[in-house]
Image (cartoon, rainbow, N blue to C red; front, side, top):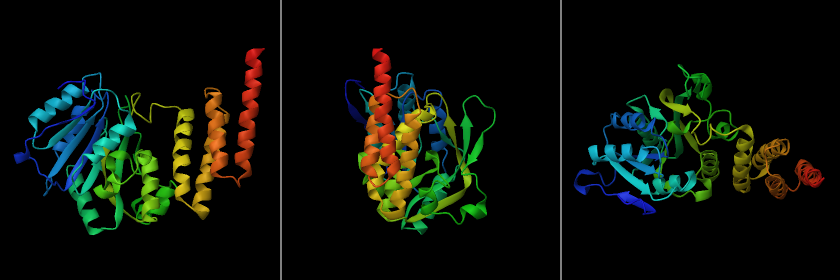
Length: 325
């Protein structure tokens, strides 16, 4: 397969591939050579009463991930479909194209560095969503592993079952509980309808909450997989400053989706992240000013937003004078 192609779907024999599987497993991967085999084995081990497919978005890895993916496809052509890229597309574009290639009623998310431990995960979550046709997401628990540690650091979400039984979209919105990406299953039409700017994890969930007006949430109360935090992880490899930048950019996009107290809550989170950026020495002046300016625009009635903008501009001038001196 030529790597000069920008985006190629590896063909699958149609006679042996379900044209409309019940579930599509959306697997995005980039430089996951250490983990991708375990991820694929955990999907192939699933026991279901329905057909499911694995759609892999391989984002031009340089460490042997692509070779492993193609070997698994050759061994399982009736189950696996592969999207190749001739150049690195990045997380958002790779996620978008992989989601758009899915054909199932539901899409189960699994990044190439995570894995599943429950062979009935797909079956149970599909049954829950079938029983709740108005639900926009089904989550579960996962072990969180820090790279190199002999035991998982925690279970997420960690609350007791009786507490989580009372939680729903409102608690997701407020961050009281969260589903690791490897535990999520969602209706395909909703996911494929999300604009590209909402394809990342937190932004996507907030978009779904807004789209469904705090709709129904399903929860499978058992540990179904392992979520890895490691140096190559898209989120876990970043420091607090970069987290603040990512969070601020997400909030820029989602704040206009909400009104009233919900909007003011998100504006408060935005001000917190902007304040964090202003205190960081490793953030470019242009980034500080831009974030503070957009925050002021998003919440013009919030005095803190204007104080942050004023502080950002003042610090930029002070730093510039020091450099000239």
